[in-house]
Image (cartoon, rainbow over all chains, first blue to last red; front, top):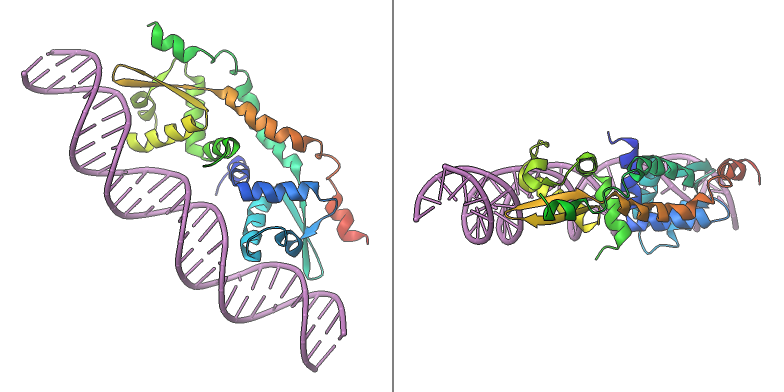
Length: 106
Length: 106
DNA sequence: ATAATATGCAACTAAAAAGTTGCATATTAA
DNA sequence: TTAATATGCAACTTTTTAGTTGCATATTAT
């Protein structure tokens, strides 16, 4: 299967899923599938698939209560992205003009 | 077209592209398409497509020198990802047990 | 019990992405 | 100038992803 960071990146690479995630982060309470899907111009099933993708990435938690399933955002999962990026921060400055230098000198 | 952050997320969501990006970040000098593709078990054309995706996301710069095209990583572009995440950091802690609380009380 | 609501599962279509091969062109080396 | 190298472009196949519809099931309301 896909590794964790790939799942997270794929989940947030889709604009619709970022919207869903955003709505859940801002919501003051957990929202049911139906409540969420009423905010989007998409079938409930289409939305459910996106929610599942977010859940599998660890960006959303879901819990059942009766016949309903309530979703809550887990923004803390984005720490994984921060961890991935951290390694590359050390290169931010020294890479800057490498290419120009390379193409002009030699 | 896709917005900048979507291009960046999609670019790094693919494991092969992350590998290519990583190799370019670690390279002490700019690498030609052929040099890069020799490190991957994939056709040159397939690799070229990935490079183009990375370039369009601003994660790689490319410059021509004679018949060759040299690529260099631009890890600084990942700042865009950091900016996107920053908003969500304020919710890392208070979201923590929302769902459990919601499911158990009320 | 019956009806309405919330949801999952499966099958399907459509669109996007990943990856290939073949050919054309420009540059460099012999 | 001829041959070799580095590359782009276009067409194509395969795989994945996005989104839909229809049906079944469980829970709640009447």
